[in-house]
Amino acid sequence: MNEVRTYKIKSPLAKQLREPGGRTVQDATRMAGEKLEQHRDGVMATIADALDELDRVAADAAPDAGPQVYRLASSIIDLGGFFDTGPLHEAAYSLCDVADRMIGADVWHWPSVRVHLQAMRLIMAGGCRPGRTSDVLLEGLRSVSQRPLAT
Image (cartoon, rainbow, N blue to C red):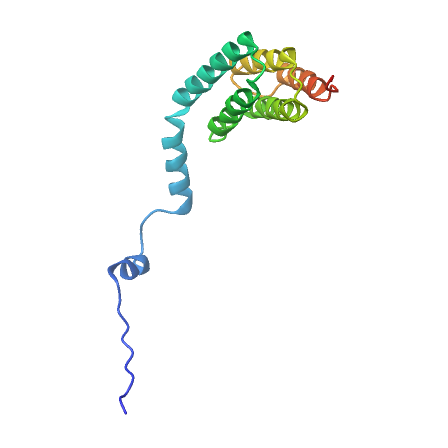
């Protein structure tokens, strides 16, 4: 009968992890935040492009453009999710909700889309900071999104 042997292999990584030094979690988090912040202007420009495209879609008012409105609004949420866009996120989420309800009911109300679009532009112009103006805009969007759909 053969005897079972167990070998412990020490990898270079295991050795490095036991040595003192390196970065703390706080340092790594800070550095990642700094790197991410370098992309803020580019992301905000991409969000502005999405708003421009949403403006063109709303101007055309095509009866089958609902999924496109939803896609654009959700892309604003996705892009802004890397940064603190506060009220912009809420406005885009509200538009997604409105678009989803309209698609489901097969009833389209373009003024609701345009109101959301203008609110998002105003929020962007204010630096996406919460405040009295954004609170009023979001309250208006809540009333628009709670509006019953006419059939």
